[in-house]
Image (cartoon, rainbow, N blue to C red; front, top):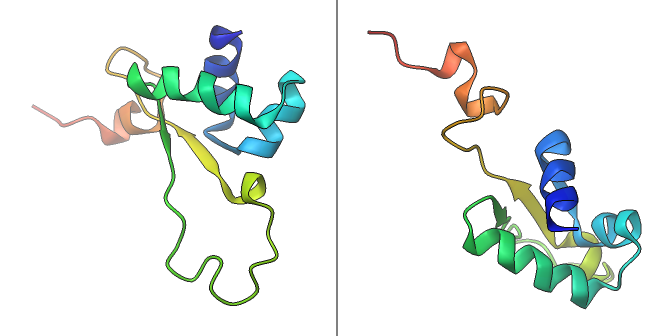
Amino acid sequence: MLTEIKNYLHNHQRSSLLELSRRFDVNSQVMRDMLKVLMRKGWVKQCMKTPRCGVKCSQCDVITVEIYEWIACDVCTTCPSLRASALPSY
């Protein structure tokens, strides 16, 4: 399942914990634990909430604003940061 999650994030670039949990039909804590494995491997990062998030209304469910993002790898030519326009010219 880790490979499927990795592929999903690679294709979608970022997703909330809620979206991932629903997509893979697991509870949010199980998904969070799997995402931690992918973060340790350097494939995924957790996006930080903006300073205003939770200050004004505090009505968002935590799993809807807990966002995970694909990190471009050095061997993947489809990642946004490695497309031809982003590569240095020599």
